[in-house]
Amino acid sequence: MAAKDRNTRDRAQRGASGKKIRFADRWQGYKSHHRDTIRVSLRKLLSEPLQTLMTVAVIAIALALPSALYLTVENIDQLGSHFESSAQITVFVKKGAKPQAIDSLRAELDAMSGVDSLSYISAKQALLEFKALSGFGSALRDLEENPLPAVFLVQPAVSEPIDMGQIKRLMNKINSFALVDDVQIDMAWLQRLHSLTEMGHKVVVALGAALGLGVLLVIGNTIRLSIQSRRDEIIVIKLVGGTNAYVRRPFLYTGMLLGVFGALAAAIMIYASLLWMSSSVANLAELYQSQYRLQGLGILGFLGLVGLGGLFGLGGAWIAVSKHLRDIEPK
Amino acid sequence: MICFDNLSKRYPGGFEALKNVSFEMDAGEMAFLTGHSGAGKSTLLKMLMLMERPTSGNLLINGKNLNRLSNSQIPIYRRQVGVVFQNHQLLLDRTVFDNVALPLQVSGYPSSEIGRRVRAALDGVGLLEKEQQKPIALSGGEQQRVGIARAVVHKPRILLADEPTGNLDPELSSEIMALFRRFQNVGVTVLIATHDITLINRMQLRIMHLEEGELTDDGAGYGR
Image (cartoon, rainbow over all chains, first blue to last red; front, side, top):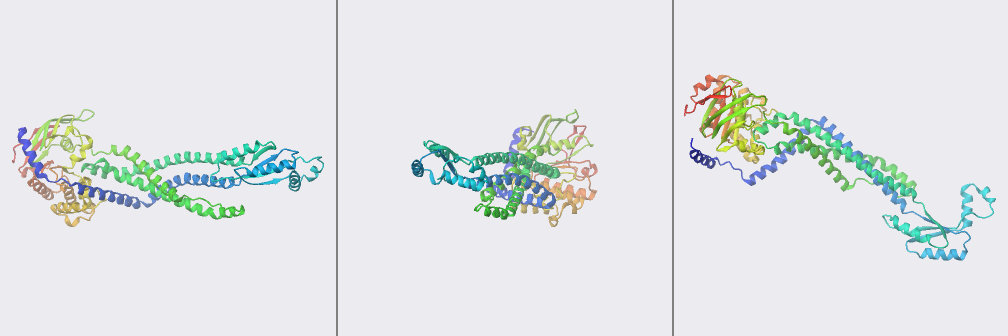
């Protein structure tokens, strides 16, 4: 056949075909296709309720564990800052200081910026207190002189969050007075708490990473099984001109839905356990005359958890889809 | 419309399914492809579906060389081809309507358009009243007609069929063939692989014959 002949015929056919789809229609079709895909994915998940429930439960536990640990660490942090605001500096006065000198030291301390309030315990008072509280009263009676120094208790003016550097500077300044023997602050345990919560944060990240990987694998495996059970469907779709993106889409939505459902279930678990613990925490706080209350996820935490769940779901599905869909070609 | 140019297909392992096959089909032409099992009929159709790529030679559709199509362009190409399978390849968990709608859905047609076209296609094969049934509830002949409706719903320019009457009795077979004739009459190029010799001999149409991968008779000119 002559090439020219073929060309004229091709052009005629192109003109007569007339089955171009308008862009607006295509966009409409695309949108409704996405809606339908989500609906179909949802229906497929609900049609196997037990399987879906188990997958969602595994995802929920894997997401709830690091989230709960994160909340625990955050709450301990909060607790620490509650105590920090009651941090007290103990200023030991040199022994044998004259009462006038102590008075002028008191005035000087009082005038310092960064000092909120202070109280004075004389050496005699301290001894009486010690006798009364320690139970060594009779032993102390044999001492020739009072071994205890006079003490100022300084309450630093602090603002939240606590600036340890600021308190350290204040302590150094007080220490530079000639009459001051030593300055101490009982914050060692707070610092320990700080490093503990810091470590806790790191554990949260490590645990979160490990369990996040678990979620990826669980969803990836679920999607892999789903791909295998829908093999025929995939082949038919490819045969009638479905693109890889079209084939991929329902699986990605399924993964995302699983992740979101898992995150919602995890949020419910966390709220339930907070609810369960809140009354005992309130009781404990009352014993310490504290207004301390457990901190929950909050709106942002909730949205973050659900978003993360969806993202993990999408990621897991993506891994499974990119690994297994390529193998399914019509033969 | 279809032009095989010295096309060969050799599978890994050395089996030559097609050997230097050359033939042409005009637009609106209908032809049969015969030969024993393993003669290369299915392979030839797979070439036209781009399920296989030729080892050598060219395949031109509407003047376009399919060798030059990348893998990502395959879906777009397949949308201008309709295929009917012997085992009909219907999705059993979907209704007749949804099965037929599939080629339109993957091409991104709006749902109103899909409804109209699917009903037109089902009407064409006489199954309009069964649109909400599952394929499993239909007889073999009806299932095959659903497969045909799905193959033509997007108005392809080429219609391929692999043993479309393989499992049907003679009466149903000639019904199916009459359907194919109707599509040919509206300008579709139809190529049917079959070994139902008695049926196609009655139809007075072009018959191509494959033997061990070689086209021994291309039947050109017959019945035109």
